[in-house]
Image 1: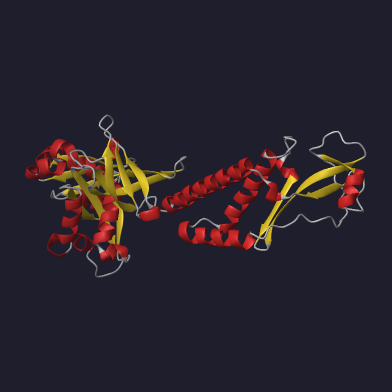
Image 2 (image 1 turned 90 degrees about the vertical axis):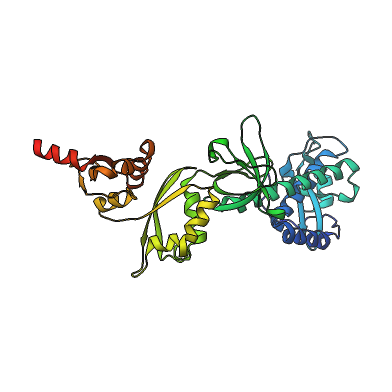
Length: 376
């Protein structure tokens, strides 16, 4: 559409003195639900634009760009942009030059003319349209605020209430948060600890894996099997971790059965394992209770891979650890009577130690190591 860029003083649209009232309502909405005033002002302007386009007497479709809504605390007004022409071909977008000069005496052919709109004449359909758009805008804003709130909680620990368990898939639906900040989370069957049973109304602690946007609000995916659930639980129970005196370096976990956690002190004089175990085992005991009896080995992390592997195989005693050249692997020798303890039931202790350290571990009893040495 051709528009003259010369500044022209054109007729102003009559204002409706409801701006202060609208803004007072929007400011209250922002306080209650956290929806920004500017966002809702844009939604209202869009609603009024759509209402005008739908309720025009000539039923002609007018581009949204040709309808301008001004909304401020001073009032509400609207105007329609048309092009001044000698001969009108499209009444929705053009205005005769003579009529244009009644609005703007300096109007020339090709100029854009602002035609005031009396918004008080909107009909019931237009008002309903505006209302629905605003309601939808509020819902979208609430979902956006909720998404932003929960997206910042990814990788955090939350407490929720079990809503229901899908009897077919085994997936559990959990309500996390409170009041207006509440949202539903999904605990997939694959993210549940084997053997745990929950029923509707039970409280449950979960680790937030990720938060996705969905039509009805944020979709929160949570877990009970993720290794970081153990990390977050120890952070709650151990002040030294929360204060940075003890650092959790790594965790290897087989949920529901056993975990190994490597820790190190960041300050001299601090016992990292003792801090996590707590007086009379109270801290580690609280985590074990939350995990319904899952065993937890806490070991000291070391920069020396041999020493780290030695610690990771706890509670088994280790005679020696030697690195295999050119591989991220090591040979471990243990006393004959410690072999089964070092390997663990179904290989679990050795498997978790390997995952914790990142080294492939070959365990041999001392008697076999001596024979191999003699043969060589």
